[in-house]
Image (tube, rainbow, N blue to C red; front, side):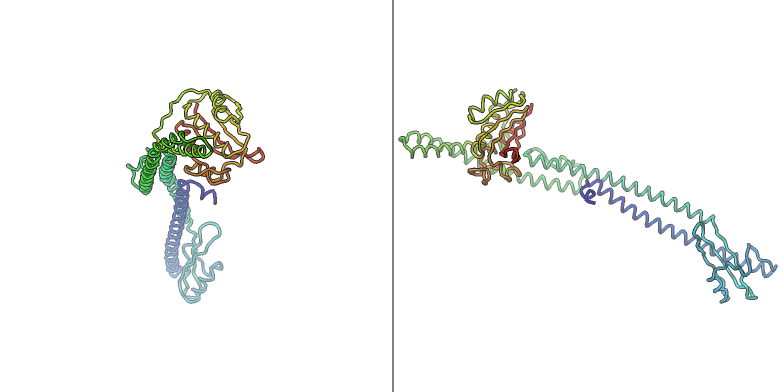
Length: 414
């Protein structure tokens, strides 16, 4: 039963139509069978009644029963004996376990005896058998035809819904050019699926406008902050040497880095960034960059590969992953190249559950360990740059029996 409810719409609709068709076919077949049987039996009883009356007239004229009639037949059913005792003519249907029923007819004689005859009428019963066979074949045809129609209708609706789901997922992944209604062919077919697609498209357009407005506001704020922050950086260089001046310079440089990161996130959100692709030997690239970005990290090349990527953007991703591992993890930090896979692992507390479940989120303040609530802009930028490269960046935690820690894996296109 659980499997049925988890099955697709096509099979649910087909099963529903098949069940309804079967119920209707069985009900009609039973009704037709009973109506035909009652009609045939009533007709047979009328024939038997006429025959027993004719046999009575012949017996009164000749003294001999006709039509195989009998006088005081010992096999006469008790209900007919009761009617004869009341001096009444009657007919009676005697059911048989096998074959056609027997139809009796009796009429009382003037001397108190009973004239009766019986007949099986197997010819009419064979007609009823043929009718039942025709009803069975017709019912099977109705159920089969209804199921086929259900498969066709359900299949078409299921395909449209699957296309709508695929298009909605592409919209959720950031493809602003996809429209659900166009994906399902809603301009040709107008039904509830088309109404759903239009509603989803309207919602996607509204969300896109809101996100674009937020992106513009963020970019404008960061851009406006860029000039005064640059002035602050210049001004801090003029401060006299000392611990207070160093603190001011550190905070100003941190503010400058934050502004640059916000601008980068805004550019990545705009989906206008284009990668300058080139063939890059991944192993050699990592060996050269990691000592500069994170001297304490260990590099291991399991399998080298040549990938199609933008070196500048790849270095940005690698630097952010290493900085995130150094800031929130614990040594040893490992960088592994395994074909087109690039993995960065530390041995700290691991990524928080909300990051693993929802992915990196911008504007969340980092903490002293990953069990806190934030992880900054670094992973958000790394994810955006990976999307521009056509790469896939995933996050997971290593099992405790393997030492634990956070694992970020980048799959690059070859």
